[in-house]
Image 1 (tube, one colour):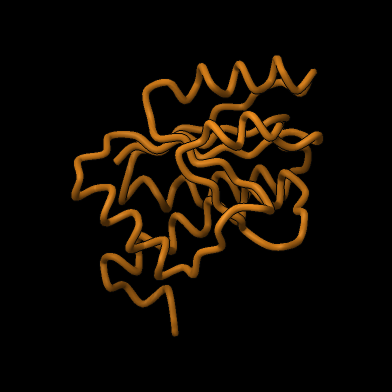
Image 2 (tube, rainbow, N blue to C red):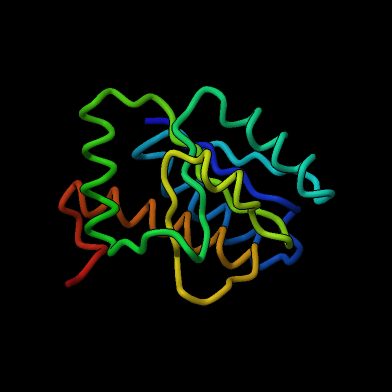
Length: 146
């Protein structure tokens, strides 16, 4: 399956960029990954750009109101999507203003990484690590421990 992670704003710190490189390299053994960065701006313009970037994939919005998954649940979800023949999943991290109610309502799926509001760079790293973790769970590799 192909993953398109869409985030608003550019990673601002070297440690964030390093973590993105690390998890991108790890994920390349399991799936194709693309990171699309949308420039911060008015929410309606940003959401239109996100919608355009998600046109050819299942849109999963990351939002504190979304469904929280355990890592093993995410692995099962990915397996099910792959079984159905899903080609691309777009994981969306919004801007500083979050997602509008209308945008959230249009999304196919809404997940929450935490009940806490996470800074965008941190959410991006946590998301990439969890996708990587899910693949290691699916392959029975020793990265994840219960």
